Amino acid sequence: MVIYLALVLTFGFALLTTEIAIGRKTKLSPLMAYRRLHPRWKPLGKLACLVPMIILPYYFVVGGWVMKYMVTFVCGGGLDASGDGYFGSFITGDVEPIVYTVVFLLITSCIVYLGVNKGIELSSKILMPLMILLVIGISLYSLTLHYIDEDGTMRTGMDGFKVLVVPDLEGVTFQKILITLMDAMGQLFYSLSVAMGIMISYGSYVSENDNLVKDINKIEVFDTMVAFLAGVMIIPAVYVFMGHEGMSASGPGLMFISIPKVFASMGAAGAWIGTIFFVMAFFAALTSAVSMLEAIVSSFIDRFKISRRRSIIYEGILALVLAVLVCLGYNVLYFEVQLPNGINAQILDIMDYVSNNVLMPLVAIGTCILIGWVLKPDVITDELTRNGEVFSRRGLYVVMVRFVAPAMLIVLLLKSVGVL
Image (cartoon, rainbow, N blue to C red; front, side):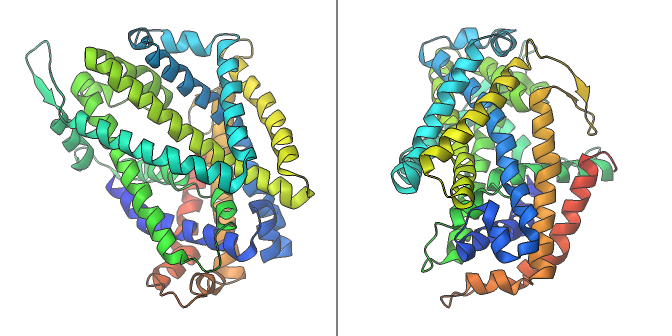
């Protein structure tokens, strides 16, 4: 967490600032924005648009999983959801995962179809405050938990909180620090939605009179605050009921196997907390899916001069086909292949690896080279201060975008493809 916070204030700040400023300066989607900055760099815009096009189909599938668990808990089946084999049985099904995927896709598409003001902005004004309230409520409850093991050992939520916030340097090696650094950088891409065209797309909607410096600072603060609260919400609860062994779970295993077991261990309160948790998770998944779809739709509109409706239909059909393949990847199309990072993967994992571990670092490296060396950082800093704003972190930004960020991204890419 310490490494992540340091990256947010330096590495993440540089990428976030760059993309939002590019969006407002060009008033274009990611597909066309790089072309406007420099005609020879239009392939970078294609890569930036390709990233969400790869992520969105499997994100629709995962969103469908979240919706399934939300419906299950709302209908009182939380205890069943915590059973061994429940998650595996669901995702290997022939029909149910596809149905939930389609429903999640349609909800996302409807919000984006309503446009930036009536759809995205209005839904965010409702969903985001509700999500934050739910996160705060569950976080506070998580800290009050306690559990006594069979051997009489008591674990409390505050003990789990210490596991989250107190650095443990026992057994730390340079290799482990490097792995943690790479994991934190990967998390940063998703948390701040950089290197996938989203912030360029949203930046293009920002008024020329807005103070971008203050807006970026707010994004850093609120994004980090919610991410930290999400950790407070999950880590203490998992630690209390599953101990250090439960802390090794991550990804789908943590979300859909370990956490439901934690809710089952809470007794009667677990059903209510589990329901609130998955409702909140559904809101979070929905807002993220909306952001990715908007980045793609806005690119189609700018490039092909077609309506929002047609853009959503074209991308919806493409995403649906790929999403169905992801669902079938757990049954009739199941196979395993080892990726360069050592993971035994099937269709979803391959798509995730290509987008997160290869394309996103490439987009970020290209952006740093374009802004840091080809066009020079003044292109961004001038945009940030066009109305006389004070950009106090100008020196840090220049150093990060020209030297530190590209170097770190190259290391991340080499690590991801198995060179390091």
